[in-house]
Image (cartoon, rainbow, N blue to C red; front, side, top):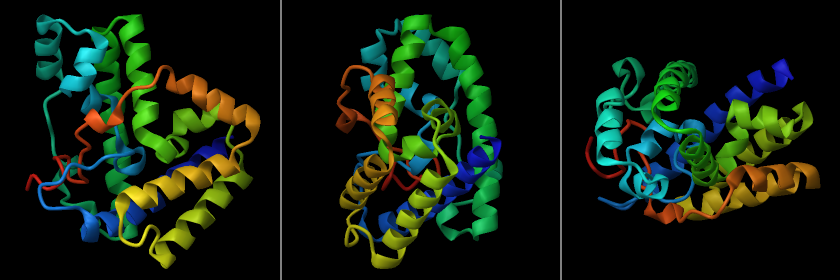
Length: 220
């Protein structure tokens, strides 16, 4: 499984590159990205800052203030710029730095939310990730994703990247990737994934973050 998780990390980088290529040409000015966000980069911190999620979790004003203080909005790891302009090696490093930051933020969130709130936040994240949930190491481990399945996902990502995916439409590409991921999972894994999602949450209410840490089209 250790080798599988390492491969999942590289797969996440490939997915990010695919989405960046599409989003660069198809994101409407000032638009609001919807779907799964930037692959496996939709963190708990980016979600818990949002009003729709805070309302779903029933956070008090005092807790909202504590979260804002503990989880300030930040740009890309190390100030490395936009991953769209990076080489594959630079993008991999950027993702590793961001994962380290997310791990630190997750510890802070776990210390502030109660058990029920934390469980619901994790469910919302799985829904927000879409197909990107399979590129998340902890979720891949829980679903027992195999090396063979990772290889099939990598192949699907390459085909979409080379073939233009959803014809330049990010939403269509994400839908195709989600459908492909569901084809690759077995029945037991699909059932586990559905359980991880919990009750349906309207992800269209989410402000999906662009690769630089800000909202798409916001110029940040």
